[in-house]
Structures are given as C-alpha cells and as structure tokens.
Amino acid sequence: ADQDGAFGAIKIPVFHFTGTQDELPALTSVTPEQRRVPFDHSTAAGTLLVIFDGANHMTFAPTKTGQVIGARLRQSAAGDPTFHDLVREGSLAFWNAHLRNDAGAKKWLLEDYPKLVAGHGTFEKK
Image 1 (tube, rainbow, N blue to C red):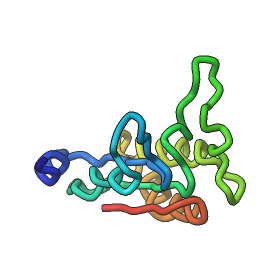
Image 2 (cartoon, rainbow, N blue to C red):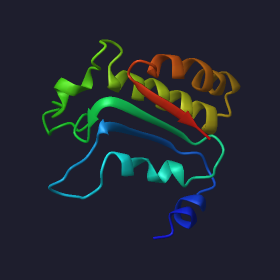
Image 3 (cartoon, rainbow, N blue to C red):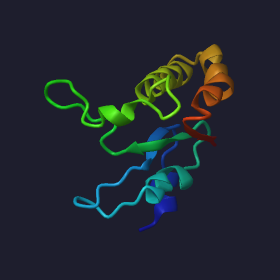
C-alpha cells in the first residue's frame, strides 16, 4: 500500500496514541512497531505521537459497565499520572490549540506536555 500517499494526503494535524505492547495477534497482524506507520508517513505540521511504555491495545478500552479491561495497565509503572490522565490532558490541549487556535495551549502541548510524558513513554512531533 502507498502509505506516503494515504497518510501524506491528510493535511491537518493528528494526535496518535499507542503503546509498546499494542497488538492483538488473534484479531490482527499489526505489531506495536507498525502502529506508528500513520505518524511516520504523515506530513502535516503539528502531527503528534505518544507511545506509552507497557500500554497494550486494551489499556484504554472500557467495558459496558465502565470498567477498563486494561485497568491494571492504565497506571504507568512509574505511578501517577495515569495513561488516561495523559491522554485526556494532551487531547484537550491539542483540540484547544488547533480548534480554538489557542497559542497558550499549543505552547503547553509542545513544551510542557512532553515533560509529563517523559518517564511514561515517548513524545514525537512533526
């Protein structure tokens, strides 16, 4: 498949989240390393990627009762903040930066948010 054509055609920034254990071998043959393909082939300025250490595909998947299947993995190995907190805070800043054109949110997202992610995973930007 033409990954450069597919993902390079997206002209708006996208915020990607995944984990180092993000695979579902029974349902798909996508490896954790392949989960970064959309980011790697994206060209839009402002596109971001966070890869959480130890997070798997079910880390963020709630059940019908609201319990998270990956509840044990929601909390990072280093303690707080949880992966959910980091996704929530980063996502909110991303939307504010791009939908509201909020310069303060963009600055926080690019300067302070990576410091929160450090120790829990990696942060990359385009």
